[in-house]
Image 1 (spheres, rainbow, N blue to C red):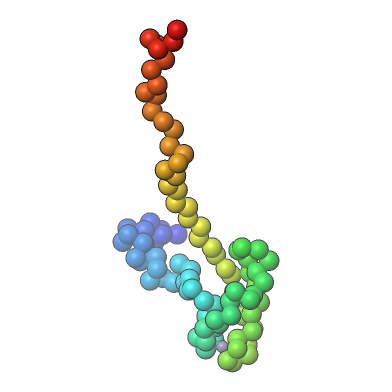
Image 2 (image 1 turned 45 degrees about the horizontal axis):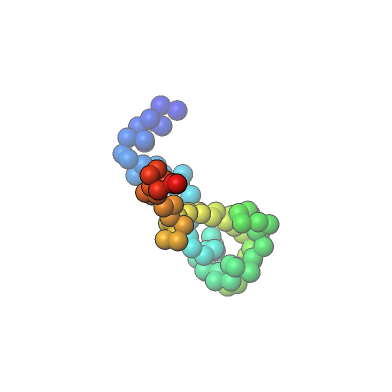
Length: 95
Ligand SMILES: [Zn+2]
């Protein structure tokens, strides 16, 4: 367990080289023959994220596929909804 601290030194590069980091692809990739499954949107993962057992469309072997989804949000104010700056002059104009 003493070489763990050593592998963290190289900015995470060493950890990836060890193969411990997960390999993510935009489509499921058969771990046997490397066939890329392009109908991944048809696969039921039981939710946004999850595991599914897939059958390779090329070599027809079964493998486990885990889907990981990264969600990011970006917000911008709407021009119509900008709260007016309080320049209303109430004093002096009232009778
Ligand atoms: Zn395959």
